[in-house]
Length: 121
Image 1 (cartoon, rainbow, N blue to C red):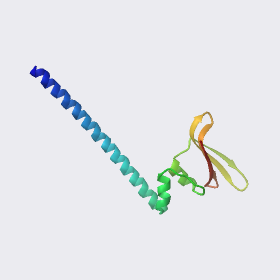
Image 2 (cartoon, rainbow, N blue to C red):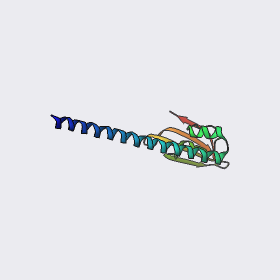
Image 3 (tube, rainbow, N blue to C red):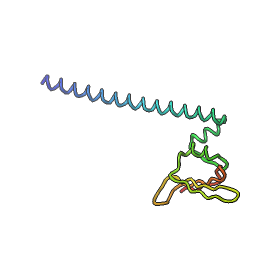
């Protein structure tokens, strides 16, 4: 009976140690994510010098007049980009969140390097 109790204690200790280790790993990963986000935010503030603009980019917002570069920093690289060249402008459509063959949930229209509109489903 003492061997059974000892085995149970060992099993409980091993399970507890694994849980503590898993929790430690989660905390370290969260700390790394937080640190990376802080570094990204500091780099964006250094680049643009505008805290409100950086807050919008970090929150993943888009707006008319934002630059193509700011769009990429806010939403990341698109799945596809289509481009049409006119006499007076270059119009690009940045396509995000592919839902099917040549179907996208989100499209952002960019003219001459600046966002002019978007469609979201």
